[in-house]
Length: 340
Length: 84
Image (cartoon, rainbow over all chains, first blue to last red; front, side):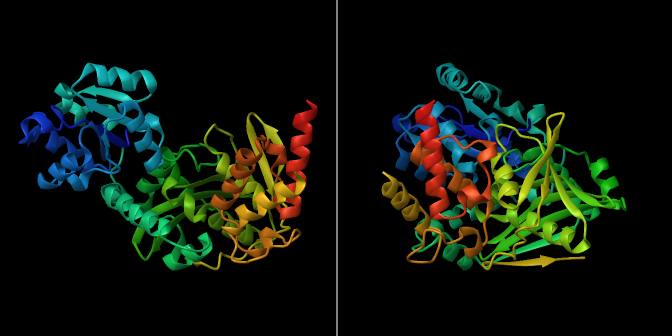
């Protein structure tokens, strides 16, 4: 799996020297190159350092590199806890993290607690961009903007924490616009990237290649839809994908997925709701395939609470069917635009 | 115990719905749009708050539709746990 975030130690890793002993430290130019290269590819960065938080953060700001690091963990706790906290805050799987440290003890401690984390010796840092797991198949507009998308999310979270009132009142303040449109050719790289990156909100776990998606796009028996979201804090990019197979009597949702970043916005149900209404007005049944994994329970609940019932199970695939007992309107706190 | 469970459920739901007194049989799913996040949070709340496991076959709207439905569902799950 492609690495989504690289977690850096500071002393003798990001910079030469030990901040609290030497005072003056300099960023290793090779490491800075690596950070910029990966940032361009849409791979995020964070920090796990045993250090005085305020002094280390002030140094990162002074060195002009602080903007690269999301949810930095600087303090006196263990590095295994730090990387777990970063994965939790970013809402990504711990198996998509890499950890770079000059000290074997720290790498062993992280590797022991989290065998899925890719641990790298700081001495090898310059060659990180060549590792296969650091090379996403496509670099899309969304991947290049990924750091900024996460930073905007952080602003939203802080606004939400400061908000008094119900969650729905907060969502109304965001003035969200959700756009559903047939996938165009230039959406396909991002669509493939979504099928590969998304685990928690993927109903079937099917991944499709660019070529397969392109074939569905032009197939008369399929609808390939992409969803975008924006709000007062800016765009979230292309965050959802649905693939519907149109049969004469029933349509089948083969794929429904949403980026983890928008989980709290409830948009999975909005896209599903759109499909329910379309199938209902076309006078066909709506079925959906679901393959349970240890991560996608949210999607199962979304289906069940949207009026789907299990019809049958075959080869590990559950087939659900909507009973049309509850065809919802779009949420009042969101504008939904459907393009033809 | 029964009223206690009801109070805990009502208190939890008050954070989501802009109504001051939710009645026992008010249909939560008719009150507003049900987001994926709310659905997941509600299921997780029931599991953690009452220490029960919500199985796939329990994931029916009728178990989660209202304060009364949730209270009855939690009661059935706790009774089943106590019996086994």
